[in-house]
Amino acid sequence: MSASRPPPKQRSWSWRSQAFRGVVYQVLALAVLFGALAYLLNNTFANMRLRGIQSGFSFILQPAGFAIGETMIPFDSSESYLKAYLVGLGNTLRVALVGIVLATLLGTVIGVGRLSRNLLVRSLCSAYVEVTRNIPLLLQLFIWYFVLTELLPPIEEALHRGGVFFSKNGLQYPLPVWESGHWGTLAGLAAGLVAALFWRHAAQRRHESTGRMPPVWLPGLALTLGGALMGWLAGGAPSGLDIPEKTEINVVGGGSVTPEYLTVLLGLTVYTAGYIAEVVRAGIQSVPFGQHEAAASLGLSRGQELRLVLLPQALRVIIPPITSQYLNLTKNSSLAVAVGYPDLVSISSTALNQTGRAIECIAMVMACYLTLSLLTSALMNIYNARSRLKDR
Image (tube, rainbow, N blue to C red; front, side, top):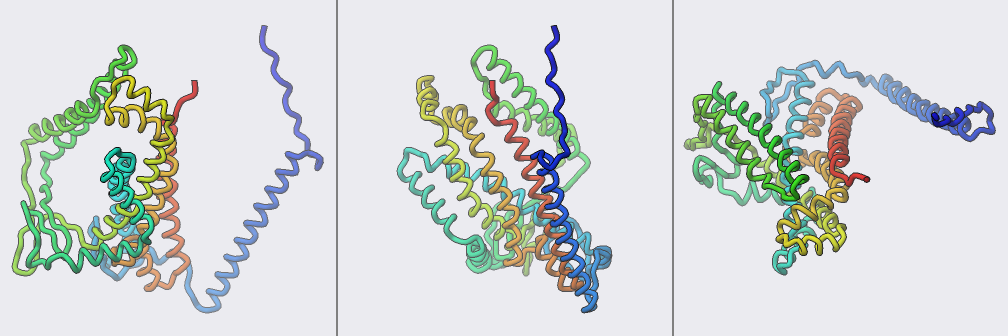
């Protein structure tokens, strides 16, 4: 006997219907909002025309006419403003992505250290959090810039070891010379990652069937590195290195990062790690104490308890606030303009001064940061959905 279906809901178009009134109010609110925006834009453009101020985005295809001191991709002053914006966006991502990884690692270590049984470790981690969170980020950037440009030796007396030079001019380091054999290394690395994933799934199935969890991280790391090594050997073992060499006036060759980049990276990492440490600490403490007792009754060590019991359950509390810290780090990278690092905001300011298109330049920067924030939130929401506790 088939179950009876509920009768379809009757739509009422009467003013007495709460749903109908709600739709009307929302339409009116949207109409007022768009009307206000249209009025403001029309008034703004009318005033700009009266003052002879040009508007529009046609300038982005014109030659920029300025050089960029630090770029990930080659850029010449004869190229367009659009490419200049892309270079600035690349510089922003270069700081934000590396900063997110380093701040997460450092913040996790500090957060776990705040719960240590060792008084010295616990006190040092607490002092780190209190100091970094209560000094403004801009001031910290100035402090790091002073350290990197005033306290380090000049390029003639650069600190060096093994082809790595560190001075007021920044950090110079050896860089592999790209050869066709490196494609084999990349292919081997990809194969090793796939093998590590298969091993992880096999270990989980064995854990579900026997109750014993085989080691995952070390075998996975060995498979990944082993695959890369085999690919490197299959590609002819390319070993060319572009090693920096010191001349009479500077250091040439290899890869390098400027003091401005190091300033922004260190400042964002140290500052954000203090907040991430508190998020990690609160997440671990949110796990019921009974879980600690259960881990102790099973004979798990302190490290095993943290890795296998506490952190997996704490993730559901840690991920939402740590997402906000990732967003803050990306947006705080705009302070790089204060120390001369050519990020998105710095290049936009130069374009604004040359073209006078204030609204357009600011709108492009806003669109870039909005896109980055939405992408970060979307990725973290996906990870949050995968790691949250599943209802039975």
